[in-house]
Amino acid sequence: MVLLLVGATAQSAEVRIACGQSLIPFADEKTGKGLDIDIIRAALRAVGHTLVPVFLPMARVPLAMRDAKLDGASTLTADSGVAGAYSDVYVEYRDVVIAPKGQLPSPLRLSQLQNLRVVGFPNATLYLGAEFAAMAKANPRYSEQQNQLSQVRMLFGHQADAIVAEARIFAYQMAQLRKSTFTERPFEVDTFAAFEGIPYRVVFRDAGLRDTFNAGLAQIRQSGELAKIEARYSWSRSPELASE
Image (cartoon, rainbow, N blue to C red; front, top):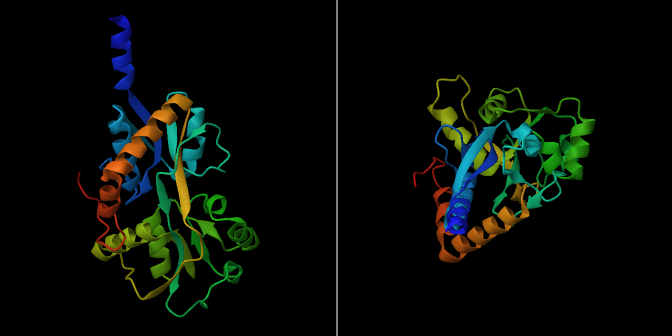
C-alpha cells in the first residue's frame, strides 16, 4: 500500500520548468500559455504530470539548472552547453532577418549586415550559428533587446537598419504595435530566411523524468494533439494566444 501511494504521488508530481517570460506567442507569463508551454504541458499531462512554468528573462533560462528547485529548462539546443538530460525536439523556431523593403540585397549574406544597426534577441549569437556570431562580433552597432516589442519599435522608429527575430514572434509584435498608442507605425518590410530552423529541447535534471516526458511527447504526436496545438499558433493565422 505504501509503495502504491508513493508511486501515485510521483506519477502526479508537479514539474517545474524554466521558460522565457517574453516569448509570445511561444510563452506568455500573464496567461501561462503559448506554443512552447502548451506542448510541454500536454506532453507532461499525457503521462500524469502537471507543468509549473517558472518564467525568467530569456537570457537567464540557460542558467536555470543551477537552481535545485527547478526540474528543467525549456527552449535549449543540444549544443547549448547546459548540463542535463536533453529531451527529444518538441518545437522548431524559424528566425529571420527583417529590414525596410528594398534596403537589403536578395539573396542576403549575413556578412552584409556587418556595418548596419542590427538588433537581435537575447543570446542570438549563441543560437544562430558561427557566421551570425562573427558578424555580430565585428559589428560595433550590433545589440540585443530583451523586450521584443521594443525591438520591433526600433525597426519602425528608424533606430535599427535590420532586426533578427522568430517569424511568429515578429508577427505577434507587429499586431501589438498596430493596436498600441506608440508613435511608430509599421511600413513594408522584406523578410529573409537567412537561418536554418532551430530545433529546441527541454533539458531535465533527471534522466528518468526526461524519458517520461519523451514518452508523453510521443503520445501527443501520435494522437494528433501536437498538430492541433501547432495549428493554433500557425504564423499564417492571427498570432493571438489561443485558449485551450
